[in-house]
Length: 419
Image (cartoon, rainbow, N blue to C red):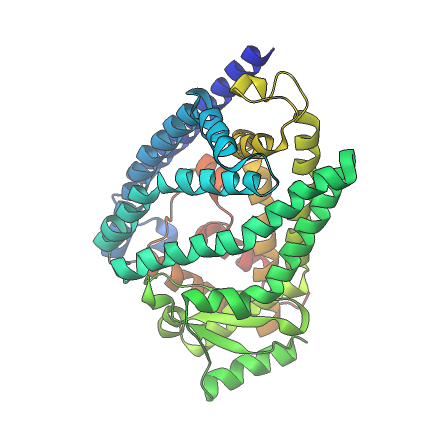
């Protein structure tokens, strides 16, 4: 049975890889077919030069993505079926014993090593691909420092959490999966509150939006919407990239509005107010708690499945481990879950796009016109070289936001009427 399951895993990994390559190929063909001239819907708003550059950027990223996807599939197959994982795990046990402290150390070490296999691709993407199209603004020193900080955070936060989860296996027995989920849920909620204060400042500088017409206008917009944020901050996103964004951090009275400095420079006040209205729309429509609940539900299901798989003779033994050992079960589930969740991504992205439509409609209603938001979306698409003509299958699988054309059409249907 273990052999059958192993072969099934190989088939699932290869099927996922083939589907991803096919989606990239379809998208490339679709972009190339429309690359000769600006789509009629944007003929008056997008220059031929910008459109050609966005198509070139999309194609370059896609070709690079195909290489990275193939490399990731090869690494996953080798890690799972070469025997290196049980060899590494048994070496850890011989060196550190089988204490509750050794298991988390093994999981973190395995995670660090597997992440290191992606470093050359991350480097190339940042310092070659992004550099080629004028987006990269970071330095090698900052790039490496980001990764060292991320590693130290993973050790400082992940190790105690893993120790607690593994201790629960001995403390509560068969119900460990539920209490592990409770601990993880509490940890994630605490991190949502603390990350803006303790973690994000380790990577970026946050400064209050200076007093003036822009700040007054944004605060007045929030008051009109019944949304009071603790602060409006500007993040030095230009330290690493010329891409732009805006987001919320924190919950309740600790929430903050964060604008990339690149965004503030790219948009005028009316457009920035429309972007803020969109973000407020996410809050007023309850998208943030819905997303958190969905993520926590997925975690609960994952722990439950692991608790059921760990004792199966066809699961762990099929990869060279002993049935009933929770440590490799956690690692194997993490490595294999993506071959299943990939096929669910259109469902989750469809929900995300629905949220974006709702936030757009709220913004148009709040500012009583849709044109500033449309103008902002067009500028952001231009500055970020967004793909104006993705293949429908590709956008359905990967896009968490509707395309620019879809968002403009929805805003035209919605109109400025209050809702």
